[in-house]
Image (cartoon, rainbow, N blue to C red):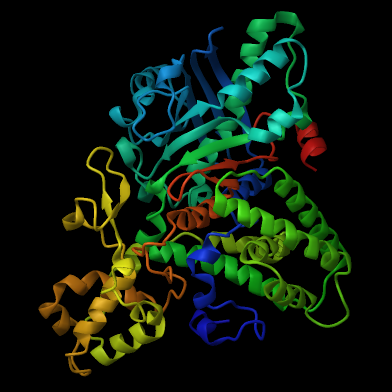
Length: 561
């Protein structure tokens, strides 16, 4: 199957979904994690390669203050999470990006840190943005306790009792990260210096490793404080209780523009997922083992839904719709497969006709789950050499460029940007934190510093300028007269080879929801329990139900199957 054929294939008559269907904010904002999500890819690699994990340093006092080191040893290299635990006053606890102190701070170190490394990091990591790390560090992060649950857990364990499961499920994590920085920020190693390592070929693997080791730290420090408080009567987590805890994440608008600024990377994520779905739909039969795994995936999805809570009106409606979808799915999956060829395609086409977008994307995740041998290798294609598409084809004729716009950006050309509601907002970068922000064009200052994230308007403006140019003229000649269009020309030309590179919606419209962009990206990370607190801020959970690095093998097999 060729990527350039994707857009011409009708829904359900072939196995590929078109970019016009997939790359809409409403659908992207309904994305669910899959077995191709980055944290799942990392866990499989470490299991398959026999990675080992230790905690060589634990220097935490009875107040919960100090430092610890967790080492992950692979076939070729060792990585170490260096954790610093702090005594954070209540009046300084905040998940906002402007916070200056946290319950815990972390750095992922390349190798095994020496005492000198630990001392250096102790002077810088707790400061986060105000400190500096070196190229020996791969990520910088911080986390805050979920205070009520954390205190409940310590109190129960110290008395020899397990935490209340309802309390565990109501939150799902002991700590939540408020930022995980990598890719060269604040002095850390540039992505280009580590991306050739096999363990980092798939995107965000260093960050996923950091968060996974952080999850181990969150239960370790809770058990440590319980032991300090309760002495001999204190107990450790029961494995089945501990398995229910993940790592929370509180993230804001800063993450939303990433997938707009990295169109080739976005294309490769989407293409891998869409090819995985296409491969499954193309299968001529459903084996008994695959059917068994599908039903287990549905059961797991039901459990996840029962634990998924939100107070945000939009997400409440989605969850209500998903419950209704699952009632339909329950009956449909109980009779699967029905007689005929391509039963997986039949199931998918039924889902498209009967389920909401939320239900369809949940169904996609379930369809992929039984087919690891068929699709897991696609994860290796999810990285991107974005420099390879940077060169502009100056010899291209204007007629060809115009045709590309009409074919791949028709959704943008149909928008009237003279209407205030279609240009109501603008993206900019805050001076204080150098983080992306979204302003109201009619109200806020800073329009003169607008970031080029209004892709639809840029395409429309270039199309208007092309109307006065001969189709035989070259792109190079056009750009000599209109250099401001270089950015959008590059994107339009890339669309020939990367059809899933653009979000096909107006990103400066008054009704645009940044949380849709955030959910799409977070689903590729592997996030669950998507819980918007506004249209620009969300909480999620990572690694819930996964094994822990320091779990005994027999415990992992018992709890996690």
